[in-house]
Length: 166
View 1 (spheres, helix red, strand yellow):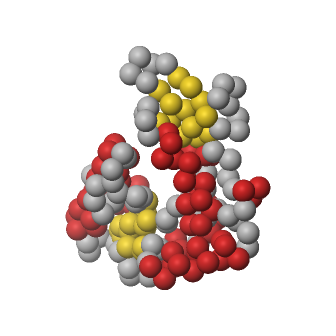
View 2 (cartoon, helix red, strand yellow):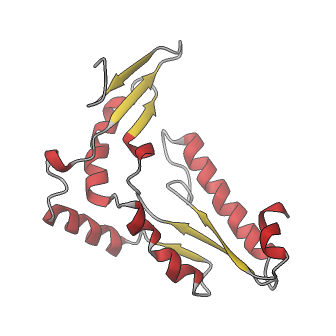
């Protein structure tokens, strides 16, 4: 199997795949993204079974909402862009820097756990409360959001702070 080939020669190693929203089931208006994350989960679970006893450990992790440039620049289908305005509040409540999202990796690969999920109810409430108390929801502290809308004819319009047309 190519995905474990680098570890096969040395007889040990840790492979970590990242899940995302949709790894547990369908997510409306995110068909391709959510389906791909479900596939990653299934692939990881299958690879974990295939590598059992080989010294190669396969882990899966859903880090939660990570604030990246990819999240800041979104392409939407017509009619859905209005629903994305709440994304700034969602990111303000639950978004985390890549460094914070990666911290559980060390714990994961130094344990026998096959999976780490940071999206527990307690974690979401705690992260949200911390965001409120530190002012991340104030309009001036929100992550800027650019939304590119593509229609069926390939026409494009951009909504957001970096937009040339609004």
